[in-house]
Image 1 (cartoon, rainbow, N blue to C red):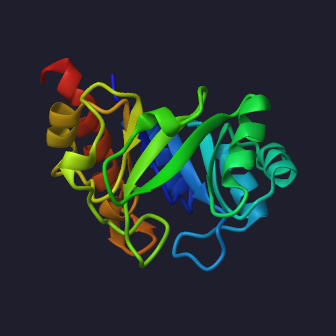
Image 2: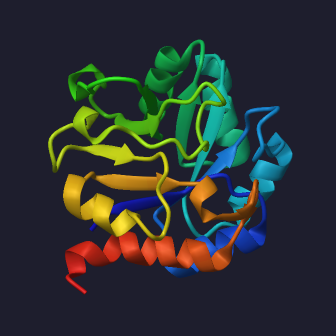
Length: 204
């Protein structure tokens, strides 16, 4: 069954909606200056109340700092961007964390560049931000169906079932497509997204 992450969580209500819907992961954005940013202490509070494993999004965080953040927040996974991302990802993996390696797609993707023990997160490239912009990926650039990667970028309840059926990614991730306003999650959209992503294999 498709792994599903709901990113950009900011409230306990968001987290409960994701848990009730059957999501497999939630994203907590620690990148200052972004729409869905939460402070570290708030991220720790949210993670402690989440029934779904949390993944922290970071920018330009050094390896030792990222491993410390995992412990401080109580997160199960990381999604590192920017400088030091490669080294930080390796350090997190060695510490036993689930690692999503973001790749802002601008051309054909070669998953052989992703180190063992890490999972590629393929997101549509946009100069407007690192992610959560709703930019879709050209389907011709995606890896072969059934490859291990998480598909993101422009997904929402109306198109995720088709994307899962056609491209068969290991997982899917969404943020802006599940909001009623920038940074404000819609519980109904979260439920529909998770249900539609997972129902493909069930044949319903």
